Image 1 (cartoon, rainbow, N blue to C red):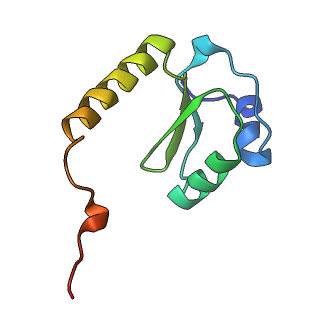
Image 2: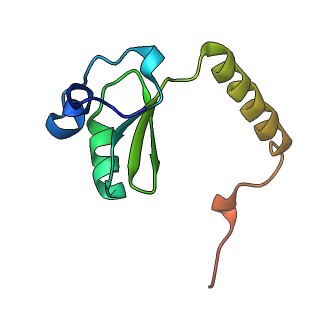
Image 3: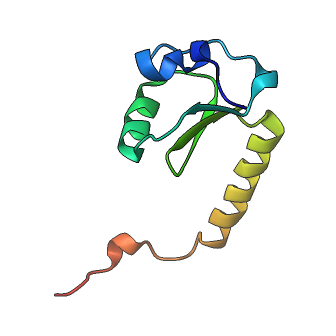
Length: 95
């Protein structure tokens, strides 16, 4: 769904608009450089997640608690597999 002019106001003026969840995902801006996207993303204090793809900035809901819990568990299982592997910090390259 394309954002309204009022919803696009944040991107231009860097003030976060009130966007209703049922309107998401929402295309917030087009023809945006990744550098501009990264800069504005750093300044955002919004309770949403933004996606950047080929110059298009889309705002979507953050994952719910179940999703975040699953990610934490997957990360724990992956890190457990590498627990006994030596750190790369101990490797010297090209002496």
